[in-house]
Image 1 (cartoon, rainbow, N blue to C red):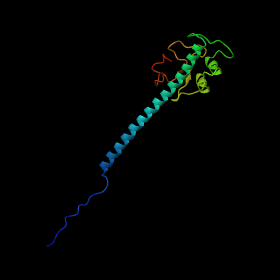
Image 2: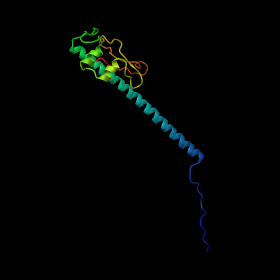
Image 3: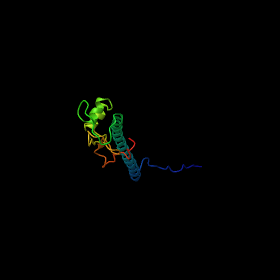
Image 4: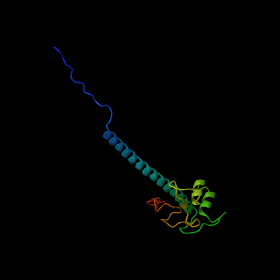
Amino acid sequence: MITRLPPRVVRNRGLSLLELTVLIAALLSLVSILTIGALAWKRGGDRVGCVLMLRNVQVATRSYQNLYGYNYGSHIRQENGPPDIAQQMYNKGYLQQNLFDLAHGLGRCPAGGTWVCPSPDVFPQEGSLYLVCSLARSEGHAPTTHVDW
């Protein structure tokens, strides 16, 4: 009796062109989603860095104002130097060098903007900031609320 073996099935190993196209499309979509997420995360981190710098300068300004008895909108009394609030705070140790540079427009926002001090010799009114970011309107670098600063 002759036994016959079943015919050999030949399988192609590898991917067809359609499978390869679908695989590449799926990988590209995942990479694009990750890139968009990473960019949004970076923008959020830049905004937080900007707001924290604004907060530090604002808290130092309010502390100096309260400690030395200045009212909102008042000019600083010239003690030993120019009538510049940031300069007086730096001289007395309320501001570090980097925050002093920010108040004079020498530093840059993490997102590339600049900080501007509208009135360097006047204590801001309640609800106003001593420094503002040039990107405050365009990219939301203004804090949502800063009344308690």
